[in-house]
Length: 76
Image 1 (cartoon, rainbow, N blue to C red):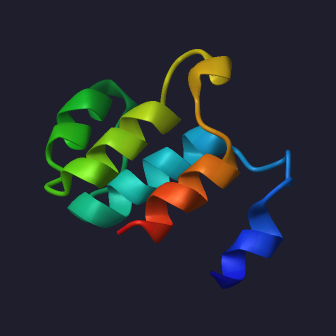
Image 2 (cartoon, rainbow, N blue to C red; image 1 turned 45 degrees about the vertical axis):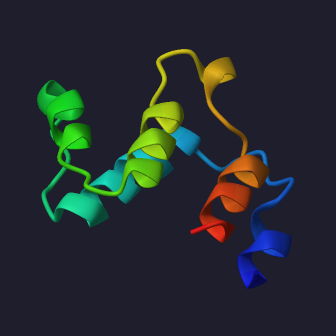
């Protein structure tokens, strides 16, 4: 995938924001921090919903790195 070389190893990528953006794109609604979990539930693709949940973990150490995210997206 073309993005693999661009994103892998890029420590500035904000995985949390990426998760929020993917959720926004899937449900076609603006993100609402007060209703974050309710919005994630609206994502119909279970693989993307799981990825989003992993990306928006409160603990940054629990979030996947971009290489893991890319691997997940490649499997779609």
